[in-house]
Image (cartoon, rainbow, N blue to C red):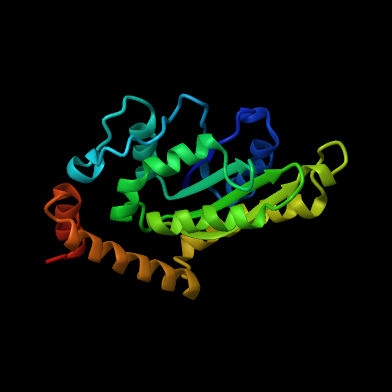
Length: 224
């Protein structure tokens, strides 16, 4: 299994978010996975312009790293999102990437892959952010296997507890296992099916305005 991880922290590989992610990847690698981690810095992926070019032509007009990252995810088997809690949401760096995935979401282009989410914070409220990140994964076609988080203010000297470490490593193991076995969670499948139907209806409604996406659905999903 090949995993791409995106870290949306300005502290990069030295931050707590990347450190918690590394434990997840440690578990995944023990089960045979390979991994590449991409740090989303302020200029790595720019905010979406809302120009609709991706819907019309399939690619983005902006000259940054988005299309390269998108291609790497397409070639991988899994995606892990990692972000600190910034005012009850993901960081601006990760949000910019997520917003730029509007075309990916319309096509559910990453379908068949597995994923997970990693969150750290100073004072808590990680769970809603992890749910948001995993829901985003579902809308791209990725099946999330879970999430791990850590409240750094509750730890001694920023050291993860044994429970957090074990949870993180198990998440990595679970991700590889789910991919190998083709595991399907009924709740995830229900949500994904509902969203797929929503996108199908959207393509029928906007087929004149978004020719690339409409043709993708015709070619890959049998849309008439």
